Length: 192
Image (cartoon, rainbow, N blue to C red; front, top):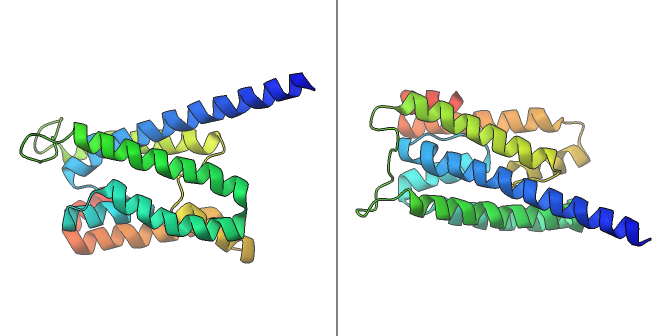
């Protein structure tokens, strides 16, 4: 019996470390490459980026607040185990995003473009790769970053809608909103 406990503790610890690695990579992609170049993505993080660009309200705060509402829905619909893991990931991601934003802000309060001005394409590519790898790591460890993932999982529970299709539809709507809000060039980077 003690052997099983040690195995479970190791699996939990490994998942925890891997999820944190993925979240940190995802947050770094946002703070260092996406936000300074006004590039957004789909999902709830993309909506929070749009809010940040329009209002300067920190993305980490809006992401945390929106996810808090979704986590209540997740608890009722998807159970405490999923909600507990997701709540941790939401808190950690919000913290990492805020830390990244603070580290990437100059004395005047502007985000630093570490690749230099006019490097939007390279920032988009690097940021997207970091975001994709980070989220992939989180998913492989059985985690979720909340947001539209929760909505898609609840929809799957009550309909025959595939999670992937639901996420693609929501991402498309959000990136099209970026096109409308910031112009086609920024919107095309978001779609990329």
